[in-house]
Length: 141
Image (cartoon, rainbow, N blue to C red; front, side, top):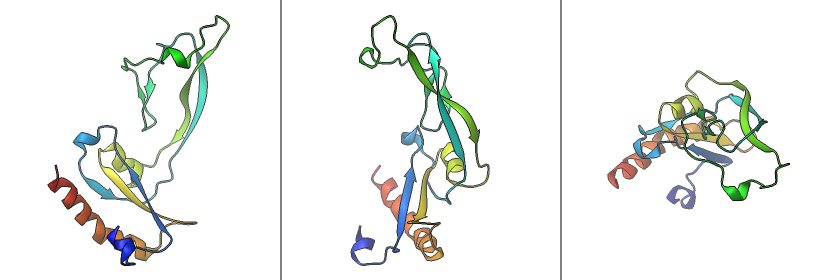
């Protein structure tokens, strides 16, 4: 916030911060570029609330999940249908974009421009800024 107050924060720049599913054991922070991955989701009908797995925030399925749908989420009528989200199609970046490092266990910090990719000066600012943030975060643990 100090950078915003003293006007050194890049104008027209936003930060996208993604955390891995096991955030307590993350490997550190990575300044990344925005990836071009996309995931197309759909719905599939299931016969019971325990069928299938749980979709994680990384768009992968946890087949060993012991969680179930809350009874309040389901209608108790016999003619009700039960649906679950599923990945229908996915194109995943394999280069060093945000999704790649998130899968590796890093907290990713991606500068985004308001209408386009972040400007070069924004990226340079965050290259210097991110190490100081991660150092202060680790010292508090």
